[in-house]
Length: 514
Image 1 (tube, rainbow, N blue to C red):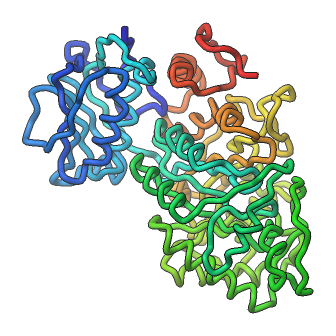
Image 2 (cartoon, helix red, strand yellow; image 1 turned 45 degrees about the vertical axis):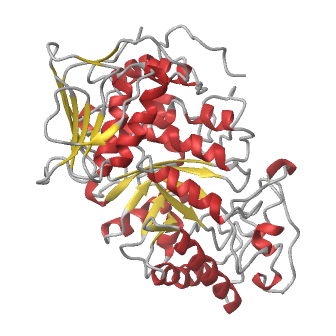
Image 3 (cartoon, rainbow, N blue to C red; image 1 turned 120 degrees about the vertical axis):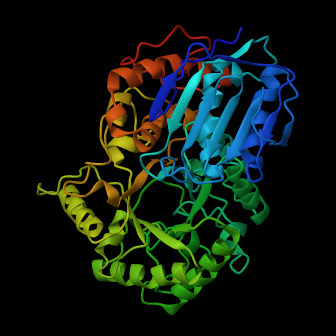
């Protein structure tokens, strides 16, 4: 029997919840999903999610006024300013209505409704039901516009099917961006027609000596379309001036001495650099960015920029100042890791992604200096994505006993992942300067999708809630209670997760992760 979930007991927690115990709704096999023009994608996603476990047909039909039963996804004829571009209003009574100003809001409403049906909705077999949803109204909208994750497919290649599964995972929690770390020292993962050796040869390596791999343009288009069908935008990352050994190993003109470097599959960082003063470097980047921009409908291209230790400070600034205009030339907004704030020419709309370990510039070490530069840039109007490595990096170990992951930034237990405030993290920076949050995962130690997911869950839900829910709702005790109740969703859906001793988990229904 399907259990259902209390109206406010979802992840991330909604902004406003108004329960009505007299208005519970039970889905019927005769119900349909009515969709306004423009609501077809989220309606189709909802139907796909519900059909297998319920066994109901749930046809998607054109909306025709108010509904007597079933589910309706509607677009407001007059925009509701309280909801913004991504919010939604869900009413559960004689039927279920999700209303929003645009498709993004409807996708977010679908994510909430999915959880309200209870964990049985995640099964891949038909269940008996009944499929009951608690009555009342939810008015919900995000604190930050950007709520993302990063998946490193360069150091260890992740096949297309695994990227699609990770997109499914993100969509559950209203995450709306996935950054694909496509290039690094170990491998180049996206086909570039003008520079075919990048994938013909440069894709055949990965950490640990595996076979590597790459995405064809058709693969990449499929990933983008699949993401769009879940309300998620793909952001490609083309790293430089460091993390470039894979490209330099197949095209010697990218090296200052004109000689190809050996391919590598170790996990060292900071040893590679494009030849910053060679026009061949920028001709290469112009070709690459032009092709990537043409393939990418989303507004952003990430230029990397981190750990460029083999590039002098002045050469680094020269590189950033040359690459940013190439990105904008092809009508994309550049994002870079926070080191790009070393450029004197940095300004909006270019976005800086902060992966430092402190938001306090008052110290004396490198971390404080990085924070100071980031804070100065933010105060000058550069939008910020927050990914503090000791809070949000999903490749950090939970504890010293964790079998996967690294620990250079910190051991990150679930409470540490949750217990920080993006709005006040950078000292003296107004919350309005923060575009959002993102949870990166680098793949040096991730040998499978099981590893990727185990290291993501439950911490990914912490980042999702910090990015979505109002600051006033952030409460560790409430979060860990909802987290414990949510474990059944992962177990029913076959998602491995870390059972932190800091959470009172229910008895398991599946075996412990290896």
